[in-house]
Image (cartoon, rainbow over all chains, first blue to last red; front, side):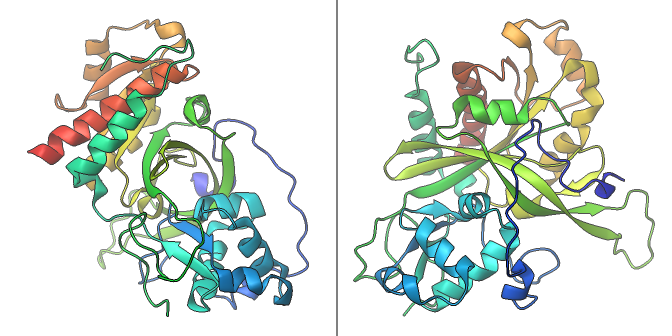
Length: 143
Length: 203
């Protein structure tokens, strides 16, 4: 089984050095994990997260660096996946922490639309948006 | 106060009095295929950011388990997942997630794939069987997908009909040739998927 090879994914070497954290992430989540065998559907990875005024006002009051880091990164809207990548934390840890901060009113979460692949309007908008992307030579694709 | 995820992102703020920047509607597509087939190259060719890597969990289902309880043995594995994004307009952002791992076995990417607009299965004609798991997965999950043969400089050593026959994909599944390094080529391959998804949604 390939499950014996964690972290073997990806096609290229995007290896990054992980800073040692003083606090083990799953200690911070008190052992809670998102996804996996949880009965609650996990928050979608593309969910947009942005710090609220309440969260920004609390920046210097967080006990844990991880909470402060999430709020700091989310000055600009980010997906959960981007937060996890930038803070080098497991996606499922970010899911739990972001949901905690949301419950405290310090983050606002904007979940993606459900069934967007059946939504003609959304699909057309994405198609139009992609078509407008020039190829490497700067030409516009013929529609 | 905040009690629920907003079901309509990009449309309304969770807090009405909040003047923080309003995020775009996030949509995603999934880039799948065997190890080393060019998934990250594909994401990087069109992403506006250098592809990022994050750790995610996937569930692998033990193959060949015939369990009377109908609960196949599942193992959750942490894998590295590469992704990128394209801001299509200020209100719409497309994320591209490369499926992690070496998909020779029954990985479940439900956690990553849920809600995806569609999937692009990248194929290397030298290792066709590497993509079977991805094709099967999208078929079973009824997620619109296309198969894209990664051919350097668009040169294909096999006839596309032969590739279709070898892969045994249904006739309605679009099959295309592209160059994972080329932005316009990646864009067009994604459009094949989306037009397929649109045709299905319009039915």
